[in-house]
Length: 186
Image (cartoon, rainbow, N blue to C red):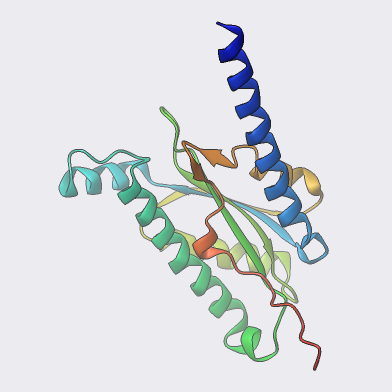
């Protein structure tokens, strides 16, 4: 490898690390509100069957599939919040945090989500049961559902380990839910 190639490679690694750190810091601003860490998988058989029915050129990481993963996450997120809080979360401005991170889009990997969440005023058992029930009914849902209490910044670091994948951010910004900043009137 030439000096120029090494330098370019090193600069790219540094940019990727800086981006990862900025994503981690963005998540950690909500750390006082975080309550749980989720891992949610997709059923590869269902996904591949759908891919074959739709387009033979689709891959697990194609933009069409990423949009389907995001649609599944959107459905899950709103059903979870509605199930736990009804409309009260909006009416009473509950500080809900939901940050989904899509991973497993590389070759020979299995697409899945890691989620950093803050779900106030609900027991761990209620959250775990609700997550399992709702995810299992979500399109393309897989059987691996892991719900753990949030303990430390280590989870935030873990979820941002692949903050960029093939020039695509891993944080599913379309499905992020964070508390609105308080206005001066409140």
